[in-house]
Image (cartoon, rainbow, N blue to C red; front, side):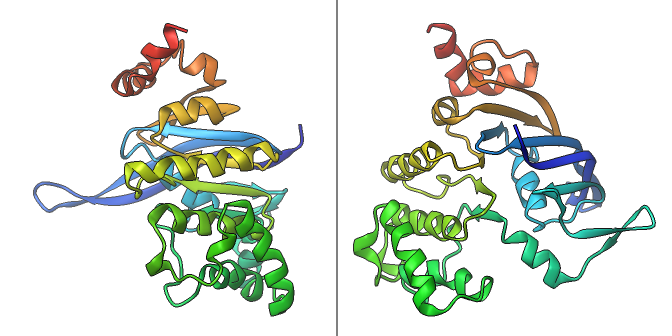
Length: 271
């Protein structure tokens, strides 16, 4: 299969943490992550808190800057250009243009409170793609219809439920027709009764062949959705493979512990 993007060459990221003595220390958040996704693939990343899974998504979208390695989307190097065999920062405008290939759905929706549902979906089409209002609306409305919100076009975020806000955010990401869409814990900020409606929309999108990388703690959803599971721990990919393998016969102690806590591995072994 054609590679949609590659996260490779031992990409690493260092961060800072404050210890119990208030001493600030540098810690390696990502430790040489080597990661590839193919067109049309749904990859789900699982891991405990502080495993680096959300940071990985932010690095792919250049919301965090890696300290070594390279990130490619559609064979385009993100955030840098090569000069005399070395990487140098590229112009912010060029990075912004490349990032239109990357959709992202955030934990907390990141909607404009002063714009309607329709206005939120139209905003990046107008700002990043420089479309006219008429052209942007022609794209935005079908995407809101796809996520079941065609009756909420003129509704502001303050009048939407958490699930509806996240569906607007999904429509906004998809309206840009990205090469890959990243989902950063898309249900973590939702009330339990609203989780199902968002997961149903994501499943519907996957059936359309959309390339997706999803970070989630919803293990049963991960098992049902993924073409491939990537398990992370302490900044490393410790294991990856098809869900039927990862959930029924995990090989790494950290993966087994994670799935045991969720109860998913035990259910898998009984199938």
